[in-house]
Amino acid sequence: AQSVSQHNHHVILSEAASLELGCNYSYGGTVNLFWYVQYPGQHLQLLLKYFSGDPLVKGIKGFEAEFIKSKFSFNLRKPSVQWSDTAEYFCAVNADSGYSTLTFGKGTMLLVSP
Amino acid sequence: NAGVTQTPKFRILKIGQSMTLQCTQDMNHNYMYWYRQDPGMGLKLIYYSVGAGITDKGEVPNGYNVSRSTTEDFPLRLELAAPSQTSVYFCASTSQGRNYGYTFGSGTRLTVV
Image (tube, rainbow over all chains, first blue to last red):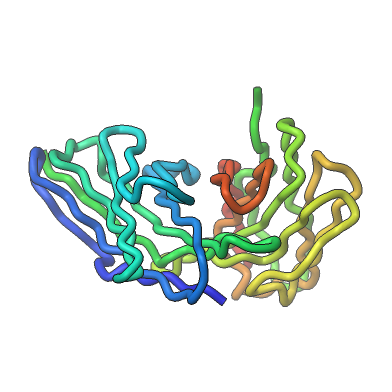
């Protein structure tokens, strides 16, 4: 079974700072990778996903993530954060076979101060 | 297009009571899922379904039951509620399975006292 590790539980940044959230997964086969965002009091929304092709994927709201297979990593980045990016961010993975379901990391709470 | 609709949004249960969390999607998605979210723990899969009449256990199924009689509906049943079931419950669906992201409902916040 796959597993996901998000190293930072809480991150505090000032507006305009750059963001990088770490995500590592554990699985020996081919995977699909996702980043979700959950704004306060809301449900999860898909930011971006990778399942094949260019390992650098771009998502909504200026976010991007890079899949590095050799490091089993899928880090989320944004060059300049805004106050409205304050939210919890979840990395998720599923195996690219069968009826594989999404396994989520524990999440990283990002607080952006104005 | 409503997407995934969950009811109720909030509920307080007494220990030992039972209830059904409703989930309906109008996107004709075959795959549906129930997750629970606890602070600092991420989301844990309770049950999932790959089509009408087909359900399977996830990581934390104990104390819950599901059914899938139609493509649209995927209710989650709690029997004999316990304080450990205090959580936020999210229903999700997807059309093609593993390559596609899930669409989530707005959640049900359940407190068992």
